[in-house]
Image 1 (cartoon, rainbow, N blue to C red):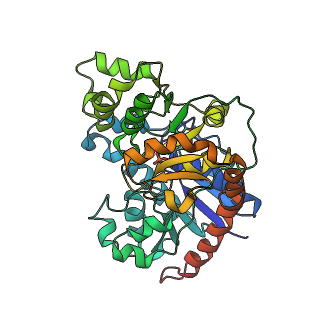
Image 2: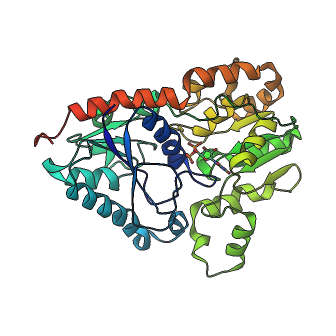
Image 3: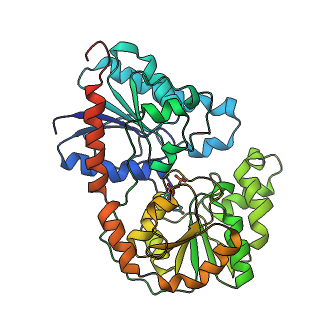
Length: 382
Ligand code: UDP
């Protein structure tokens, strides 16, 4: 397809991320596939991004994720500085056919403000859309096209946003055809940011009670290693104490973490992450929110790991109860289901991921939406 797309991944983490990185993983999965279709990609990210693209735009040398521990009035300039650079680039050149934007709120706000001269924009909504009622709740829809990452996310969206969205594109993983040699252990894994929404405290409570080993992988705020968190906790003046995820871990999770039955191993990446998934008996998703997309869910399926979780958000859309995973309505039921994971055939999980959650499927769907977004160009006709 003869198209030049500015892919705005934002300033928070490099693409691909070294370990945790929801949006950055989506971009890293999508871009190579788009380029195979002949799309030229200008990546707006941080300088340290290693993803192969046609061109790059960046302000920051490296990911600014760690800054998010600071108070809002000290970090609000980061996304704006990144977007100001993107806007500059778009004013300077005329060859960008479309911006595919992934930056929460600031992205569509700045890109819409370019007015009639700006290029068409497709803004992917990666979040719980109730999160910014003042912005997404009154989303004007003019000039900015949107898409969700699941049907259930859009079903719950504010009406104006739901009605103007072009549709949804499920997340994907490049792991779909990979078979990882890893001896099955007894443990189950929760892969993701350690935060209340992902429900690690529920996983820990259940596993401790049942005597099932649990591995928690993922960062606590910007702490990728337990030692980073220990350093914050030892320094009474560290602003990290106020971070909600730090408070969640210390208040609700750490009491279960005994280094034996329940372990927090920090962030894992690359082959280590894949082996951890593949060696687990199940990937656990005790969600405390309506998870909109869930890359970690499709990664588990792709590696033949049954998904066991609470029936909410994207889970019932992506996981077929009894075939690729087991879904519960309550914590008690979830605990019971952990005893039944052997009923799930890993080949069924892999087959579902191969059919529905590959980069090729995702890219084809985005190309359809790009066509629609370009057709709905701004009044200037650019
Ligand atoms: N992840 C990782 N290492 C970790 C924890 C998470 O590589 O230690 C990855 C995980 O495999 C997934 C992404 O980070 O690709 C998290 O994406 P998801 O959509 O599941 O969560 P969210 O974006 O809501 O944090």
